[in-house]
Amino acid sequence: MGWLDKLLGRAKATAGEATESTGLREEGRAQEGAARAEERAEKHEEMAQEERERAAGERADEERL
Image (cartoon, rainbow, N blue to C red):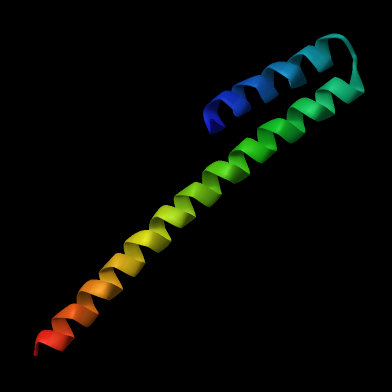
């Protein structure tokens, strides 16, 4: 759940800043960054799947000819 991890990461980072806890702040930032990276990876995988499907369709069309 990327959005939930981003939210939890933001909350940890904010709590860390409020309590001046460097460790908690850094943990929150890392969690939020990991969630953003996961979302980007999922988006790129969707784009790759669409491209594979498009290419398969083109090959099928060429074989029919």
